[in-house]
Each structure stands twice: as structure tokens, then as C-alpha cells.
Length: 222
Image (cartoon, rainbow, N blue to C red; front, side, top):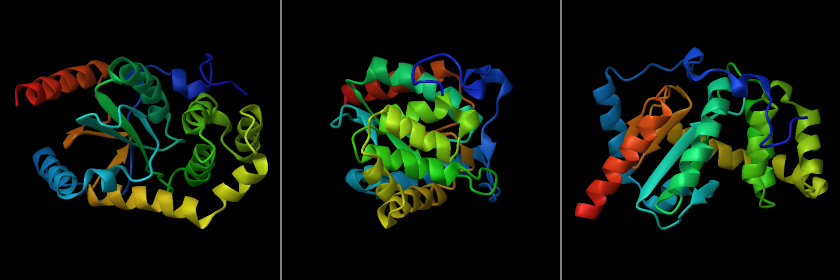
């Protein structure tokens, strides 16, 4: 097992430009502009608290800028962007709220839902982000043995962990995120939305900085 924060984990260290976002099989909106309009309508029509829900977050809870990541623990590109987000969020955490949303692509990733439930269960004991890092660092080993290894290594109450990941609450939490992804007509993982702006899954890390700066500057001039 590769511990969170260490080098390794196979696909997580693959070059950015050699990976593409994993796509689902739904019909995409007719154009990027049409998709952006859908995303803006959904985001602006929902209450902030409802959008965030019980999802795992990092950063400032009161921040005016919210970055949503819709992600699948079995998606190689999601593993790459997890490292980029750790750096970006760490730099901007005083003025940014980062929200993790589960978007398991079950038709191509058999471990997408089990890993999401395991991470959710770890979150019930305050260790979502450490578990998140552990799953991505060991992405080639996703499965029951790894889920229990990580729980034990993090000194979680394993009995509670097992109860929580098998619970109806875990299923409901993931389903809620999936339903939001479907409303937004997201086409693959990872998908990012900063406030109501859809960011392409293959966007380079510097684009997040540029968009953040532009939004932040606009907010401060209001």
C-alpha cells in the first residue's frame, strides 16, 4: 500500500497531457455554450447549502468562490487532478471552498461506487480527505482489501466504518451527488464548476488560477 502523500500509485503520476477525462454514455448538450447555460441555470436556481449538502469540503466555509469537483475514484485523470487540486486549494483556501462530489461511472468502473462509499464512511469519522488521498495513491489496487487496509492504517473504528459504508445513508449521499451531476448534464470525470462556470475536465492547472483570479477580482469590485 502506498500511503497518502508518498510517490507511487501508478496512474496518479502519469503525465497530464497523456490522459483524457473519462466520458459517460449520455447524450451531450448540443454545444459548449448550451451546456454552460444549463450549468448556470441549475447552479443559480439552487440554494448554496442545498448545493453543498453534506459533501466533504476544504477551505473557507464562508468563501464567495466555490469549486465543485465531480469525481470517480477509479478514474485515472481524477487521480492526476487530485494532486493539482491539493496544491491549488492549499494556496487559495482562505478565499475558496472546495467541494467533492461523487460521480461514479458505474458502466465502466466496477469499483467506483464501493470506493465512494468507503470514502464517505471514512468521512463519518473525520477522515474523508486522508482516505481520498489513499484511494488515489493506490488506485491500481481498488477493492475490499485496500478499503480495509486504509481504514486500519488511519486507525478508524473498522466496525463503524463497515456499518457506515453499507448503510442506506451512504447510498443516498452518493445518489444525491449523481442526480446533481445528471441535472448539470456532466459528461465525464473529472468535471469542475467554479461558482456557476463549467471548467473543461482537461483544463491545465494554470487555468484554475486564472479563473479564480478573474472571479475574485470581479467580486471585489462589486
